[in-house]
Amino acid sequence: MLASFDLDGVSGDPELVRLVKFAAKLCDAPSASVSLVEEERQRFIASEGLDITETPRSTSFCAQTMLGDDLLEVLDAAHDARFQDYALVREASHLRYYVGAPLISSEGAPMGALCVTDTNAHSQGLSELQRGGLIVLADAVKRRLEAHRQAHLAVFELKESAERVQFILDGVPDIAWSAAPGPVFDNFNARFTEVTGGTPPSGVDDWRAFIHPDDFEASLAKFQKAMATASEFADEWRLRQADGSYRYVISRAVPSTDDPATARWFGTLTDIDDRYRMSQERELLAGELAHRIKNIFSVITGLISLRSRGDDANQKFAEELNTNLRALARAQEFAMPVSGSRGETLADLLRVLMAPYGADSSDVVSIAGDNVDFGGGAATPLALIFHELATNAAKYGALSVPAGRVAIDIRQTGNDVTITWSEIGGPKTAEPQETGFGSRLISMAIDHQLGGSMAQDWQKSGLIITISVPRERLTQ
Image 1: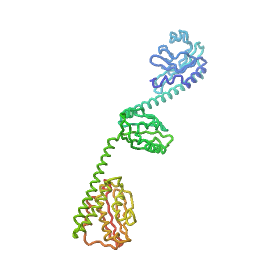
Image 2: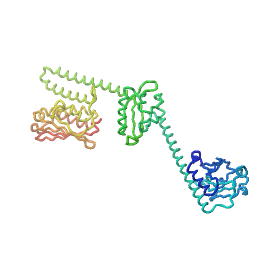
Image 3: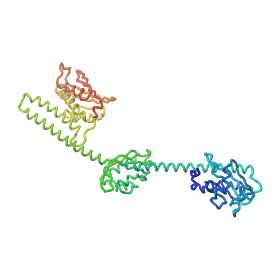
Image 4: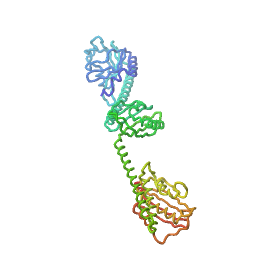
């Protein structure tokens, strides 16, 4: 139990020394001490007027004091049968007077005593005031010992916790680190040295030895910006390995607070090299596939034009078929671009599809509304739908007259996306008596391929079509 009080750490404590000095003065004696009794010895952790630091427990006055509930006072130990044979009494130190107040732990276990001693016998015992004062001092000693004990236990538990965390971190496959404000990188798990074969960096510039030269400056700028704003950091760069090669990692770091001046940083390095290279290979293959598909569209439209040339009966059909194929080709290029990155929203796709009708360069076709994420899987049916709508508008609707225009509005409500096609300023419209091929094509694409619905409003001022599609069908 006494081990929890960290006796080595509390020995010579200035507060305890002040208490024992006052105890000696209070009792009109030259010496006093705080004695803690262990299994084989008693230790004097704070003393006044004593040259010794410990004695055997077998000849300890305090070993008996701590077993009682009150002060133990001995006026002349040389004539007290309990103590007259003790070495402290018989030998050169010839202890004669002793008074001790027991020290009991918060758990109720005896620890030792606050004692006052003299080499001269006393003719009378302590006064009530002195006895009460010694008890008060003993209580102060206990509080001081308990406070030191709690502090020691807190440090011990913190150290154990840190060791457990370090043990866990050393076992994870990622590199983990922490940094004090500055930043000063003060802790790395064992994985860093295992991977890099080097000594962990302490300052930002020390990372130059481990980050690929082509990646260092750009990543440093991102990290400095994150530090300046105490915001999360993430970047991908190449980490030098122990054999001198480089592998891609994703570097992440988070601040402990939102105050840039005081924030500590905690980060990880996760190896993504295999995934990165597979992604690069997939992008290369996807680019090659997109290129081949684009060529196939070109070959098909070329063959159709070639076969229909000079054949008046099939010329119109061929032209309509080619315009459909070109719309599909534009949608395919959006979903799988041969070069560069594709758009990411539904509005991006509609701008590509409606570009031949002025969506990019004029207000003939306007596209507005919510930004709805688009996965590319619905590109083909949407290409067929909006190509057919635009073709009909160019033949019979708003796009068939100079003043006409089309407004496309995109709205997301819950799990559904609504696209409204409004023709404005065109000739008067009326619902056709028969359903043509184009209408059936639109209905099939909406109902079967997109799982949505369509409503048509044949107003005199222009056709309004409302298409509702589940959002998940657009993001696949």
